[in-house]
Amino acid sequence: MSERAPGRKKPIVPRARETAVAAADFKARCLELMDKVSETGVEYTITKHGKPVAKLVPCSPAPKKKSFFGSMKGSVLKYDRPFDPIDGEYDIDR
Image 1 (cartoon, rainbow, N blue to C red):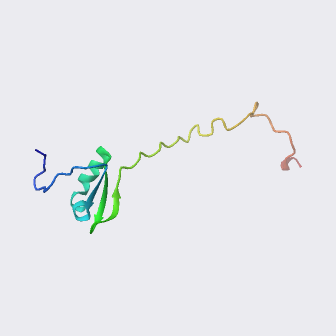
Image 2: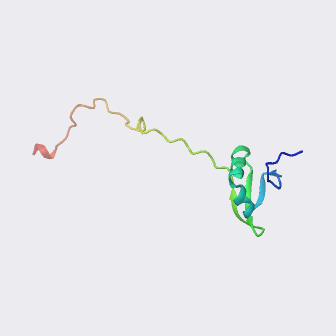
Image 3: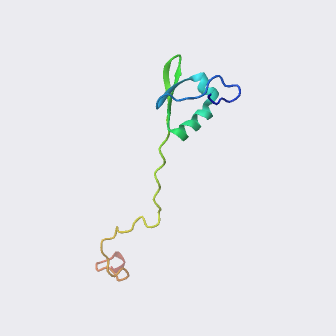
């Protein structure tokens, strides 16, 4: 026996990895379908008058953002004595 919520006509049972859902049915069960997608990874195609108009698919996790601190590590090739004056002529010396 399948589990049904009170007032539901039919349970949501994905037959394959992709299931077609009518737009009116999607509107009524949108949050439930989104939970199913996040839990199981099943894809839903939303149809209007039998023609596909949208697809509900699981999203990929956002890439981890690199920290600002340490982002320039290794970018200076060689600089032995950073506090010594640089040889050359400056505008202020003229």
